[in-house]
Amino acid sequence: MNDASSSFHLLPGAPDSPVLLHVPHSSRALPPDVRADLLLDDGELARELDHITDSHTAEIAAVAAAAAGVAPWRFVNRLSRLVVDPERFPDEREEMLAVGMGAVYTRTTHRAALRPAGFDTEPLIDRYFTPYAQGMTDAVAERLAATGRAVIVDVHSYPAAPLPYELHGDGPRPPVCLGTDAFHTPPALRDAAREAFGGFGGVGTDSPFAGTYVPLAYYRLDPRVSALMVEIRRDLYMSEPGGQAGPGAADLGEALAALVDAVPSALPA
Image (tube, rainbow, N blue to C red; front, side):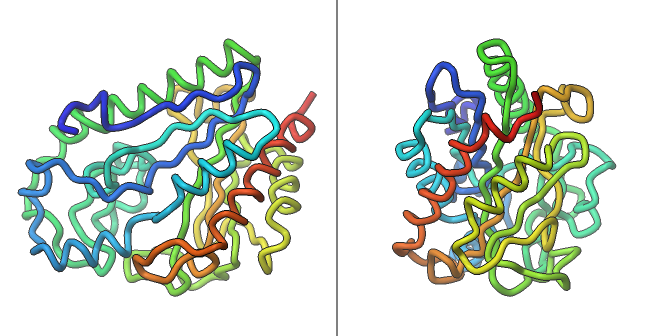
């Protein structure tokens, strides 16, 4: 997957669905030339992928797409976030630059060196980040053109115990964390997610991870674009750090489908 056009996949849903399930961090795949620039040996890389990958979230989204009454669209990153992280700001606005984890990571989850000092990140931005951002922008534009609304539901997972890279890891770590944005997250959408995921032991908001992804072309500009991040604590559905999915994954997929089905009534008139 050295070709940026094959590094992400838009899976069609129902023509009249405004919902776009965004799955940015589920893959472990690395192009060989990108792998060659990483300072980790194979064992160290495998452990880092265990920690940094939102394992099985693509499968959870697939369950939701199959179970929903009106199938959502899915935009799935087919490469590891160790290539680029498509959800970071590509400039100095990104707070994770403080720990070497901007759009191109230079440090690991445990703050060890991932790439050499002085590594030029721009080729990876040009080759992978920019086409991905354009792909998501186009996908949102298509939902707006087809339905008049676009609703991005960002599907993530996070570890039960904080990792050293986390800037806000000292707060609550509920079974399900909802990331919100004051402009793009209608309260009714947040409340619908609270209800959909209410059977998993607790739903929190914006801790340990806050905010949600919206392409920059629409960010804080277009109220027709709504967004919500769903962060699922990994011990609900898998053995950590990088184990196989358990039966909880299917249950979470069904809950995500319930959220998808609630979207029409959760949007402002």
